[in-house]
Image 1: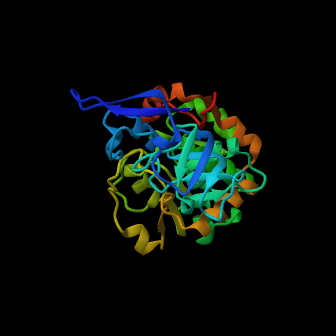
Image 2: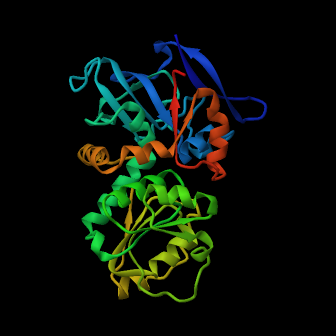
Image 3: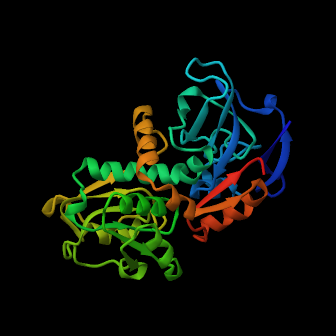
Length: 331
């Protein structure tokens, strides 16, 4: 028997609540590989899945959330993995449509797993998680479209959040001048410790403008906010430069014009971490192991256990979680 955080829907209210329950391997959905989970984490999607209505992501109850996990293979019917292998899982709608990592054991399809790269522990992999993996994909996409440190400052919006924190640390480590946007002034020292060179108050970018183009300021942008801020940033990009869109904390609408694309050749790059092909996943995890300073990663970490998850899920939806939560499922 093992512990898991299980969400159950109450018949009368139709709302879901979570509690720690004991399960057996027979309770798990079918999978090619059984993983002894060591660590998971808390992302915005996890907050939605932990909410009373499941955020529109959970298909059926009872349900075990947790869109990320890392651990050790315990059993495998697939030749690619054998007992004792260290593995990481992010994406593939695990924790949403499929049972996830808020459990001491999990079953997965072999296609969903990635070998833990050399130089990373399972705990560090979950300090990275989907948020950090997405940040690395965004940096890679910007580089693939010509971004280099000598082109000018790179903007990171929502910089104190999970994606923003890791993006700031990676870009700073690679020698970029990083301008970190935050609405929480108290996070300024934290962001500078990660590698930000300047702090941009959120209010400076949060208002829409009637001008489709402003001064050319940014050589690149990792945007976790969307909405009016993304529209504003598009008009401030340098000629031929790119924005990697990774989130919508500020809303899904984009009150923008096509002028930045037509007159400045700006690129808007969509970053999806859920359905990324295997080869690009491996490439990103290898880059994380070499390009993300582990001391900076550790500075982002907030430790937690399974019992902390309901509150943390509510906190992250309110924008009250700084950095990265690492959940020790065996604590």
